[in-house]
Every structure is written in C-alpha cells, then in structure tokens.
Length: 75
Image (cartoon, rainbow, N blue to C red; front, side, top):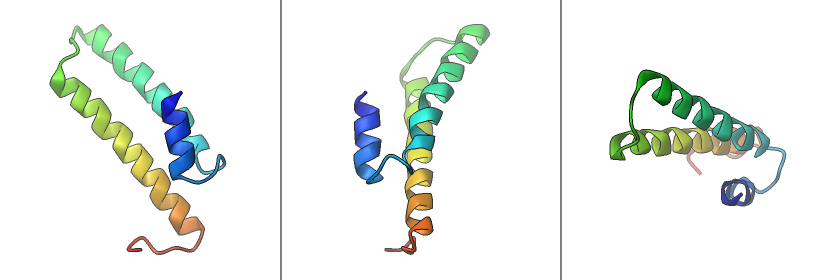
C-alpha cells in the first residue's frame, strides 16, 4: 500500500503510475516463486537484488513520464 502511495506521489498522477504499481507485485511474486522452486533462501543479497530491480522499474517509469511530458532527462 505504501508503494502505491509513494509511486503515485512521485509520478504525480495515477496514469503514469499504473505500470510500476502493477509490475512490481507481479515481478516480486515471480521472484519469490522462482527462489522457492530453485531452493534458494532469502538473505541480504537476494533482498538487495529485489530492491535494485524495484528501483530500476520506478526509475524507468519516472524517466518515461518525464519524456512523455516534454521534460528532458537531464532536468
């Protein structure tokens, strides 16, 4: 729930936030399912990988939102 609020506030609207709001739980579900199927445990390294992937998804959504509104990426 907090992720939805934060992503919605950062992207300043619900329309550009739809992709990360849907993608992050789906990816996390597959991530934990694959880890369970392969017999891996949750440790600091796997949690760091998940946090990094979530950050990349949110950063791409933010970059796409800025580019579609006409703001340059360097701004």
